[in-house]
Image (cartoon, helix red, strand yellow):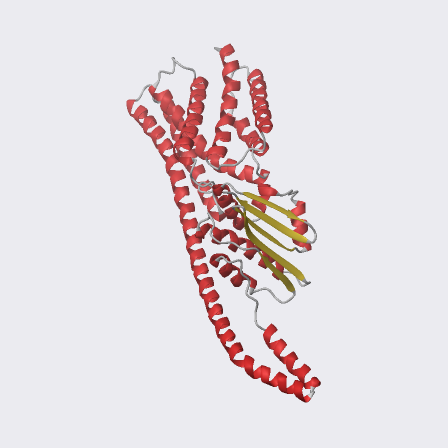
Amino acid sequence: MTDYLYIIEPLLFVSIVAVYVSYFYAVYKFKTRSRKSVLISFAVSLALGIVISFFDKKHIFELEIPAAIIMPVIIFMIFDISFLESLKLFWFSFFGISLLTSAMENFCLTVVDREIIQEKSMLLIVYISVIILIWLLYGISMRGIGKNVFKPYGKIWIPLLLLSAFTVFMISNYQYLLKYLVEINRVAKIGSVLAGIGGVSFTFIFHILLYYINSSRDYCANLELSRSFNEQQKSYFTELLKREEETRRFRHDYYAEQMIIRSYTEKGEYEKLKAYLSQVENRLTSTKKVYSVGNEIIDVILKYYLSDLSDKTVITVMGTVNETNLSEADLTVIVSNLLRNAVEELKTMETDTFFLFECRQIEGELIIRTKNSVSEETYFNLKKKGLKGSNKGEGHFGFGIANIIDIIELYGGSFDWNVSREAFAIEIRFFD
C-alpha cells in the first residue's frame, strides 16, 4: 500500500491544483496567459507532489496545506490577473471548494467500507469528480453566464468570506468528530451522511446567493443607467428645441441685420460697421456647439458629457453612424463610460487640453475611438503598474472599462488602449 501511495499522492496534489484552475476558468472565466504557462504550472505541481510524497514516509501529511500555499502563485502564473486578485479570489473560493470536497469525502467514506479503499485514494476520486462536475456545469449552463456574477465586489466579500469560513470550520469539525463514532453508532452515521449532504448543498446555495447579489447589483446599475440616460435625452431634446427657437429668431433678425449693414455700407461708416459685425459675431459664437455622429443615442450622450467641459478643452467629434448590431443598452454603456472617464480626467487638469471622439462604420465594421489629454499623475500610475495595452489592463480601470470589455467579449469585438505623456487613447472595434 505504501508503494501505491507514492503514485496516488502526486496525482492527488495535481488534482487539487486542477480543481482550482478549472474553477477559475469555468466560474470566474479568466483567460489563461498561454498554453506554455499552463503546462509549466502543472509540471511544477506534479514535481512538488512527488517531492512531498517522497519525504512523507508515513503518508500522513495533508496535501491541501502546501496546495493552499502555492495555489495563489499558480493561479497568477496561469491566468491573466494580478497577484493580489489571485490571492483574494483563491481564499474566497478555497473555503467553498474545501467544504465541497470534505463533505463528499466524508459522505463516501461513510457509505463505503473503509477497508475497501484507502482514504487518500478516495480523496483523489473526490477531486476528480469535482473537476468533472465543474466542467459539466460549465458546458451545460455556466458558459453563457457573465464572468462577474460569482465574484465578490466591494466590502461584501469580507462578510461572505467570514460566513463561508465559519461554516466550513463548523461542518468540518462536526464531520471530524463523527468520523470516530460512525462504526459504533448508527445515529452518528446518519449525522455524517446529513453533514455531507449539507456541505454540498451549502456550496451550491452559497454560489446561488452570490449570483443573485451580483445580479441585483447589475440590475440596480442598469436601472440607474436608464434613469440617467432618460435625463440625458430630456436635456438633449430640450437643447434641440432651444436651438430651433434660436434658429427661428435668427431668421427673423436676419433681414433687419442686413438692412443695418447695408445702411452702414452706403454711408461709408466702416468703423461702426466693424463694431456692429463684431457684436453679431460674439452673439453667434456664444451659442454652444452641438456634436453629432448621426446616432440619436450617441448624440444624446455626447451632448450630456461634453457640455461639462470648459473652453480650455478643444473638442473634436468625427464620423457617422447609423444602425449598429449593438443593443441600445450596450451602446449606452460603452459610450457613457468612455465619455465619463475622459471628462472626469480632463476636469482634473488646469492646462489646455483636448478630447477626440470618433465613431464610424467602415464596410460593416463599427469603430469607436477616444483620445484625450492625460495628467502626469494618471500617466505615472498606469506606467507604474506595468501595463502594455489591450484588455490586460482592465483590472486597473475600474468597473466602467470592465463593463465595456464584457460587452466587447459578448459581441466578439476587440479592445485596445495606450497611454503616453500627451494622451490616453482607446480603440474599440465590432465586426459583422
